[in-house]
Image (cartoon, rainbow, N blue to C red; front, side, top):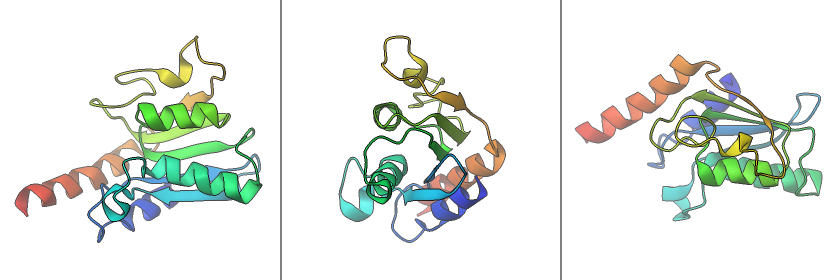
Length: 145
C-alpha cells in the first residue's frame, strides 16, 4: 500500500484526485500500476485501478488476471470493482473507504455480490488513515485554490 501511496502522490501536478493502484501477481511482484488520469487524459475511465489493470493485462499478455491482487489507495467505485471482477483478480485490497461511491462494501458491494460470476476476496482499511489523509489534503487545497 505504501507503493500505491507513492504512485498516488505522482498525480499532484496533473490535477487528478491522488489515487494510486497496483496489480501484484501471486508472488507479490508488481505487474501493473496506475494513477488517476481522468483530468490529464480527458478520459472518464482513467481511474487508477483501470489503468493498473490495463497495464497488468498488457504485461501478462492476457485480460485474465487470476492469481493477482489489485491494491488501491481508495475503495474502488462500481466501474473499477466491476473491472476487477471481470479481470478475475483473486483479491482487492484498498486503503480509504469511500462513503460516496465505494463499491466494495461502503455504498455497494459489487465485488462480493452473489450474482457476479467471480467474487474476489476484499480487504479494506489497509493504511486507511494515510490513504484518507492524502485525499483530504488534496480536497482541502482544491477548496483554497
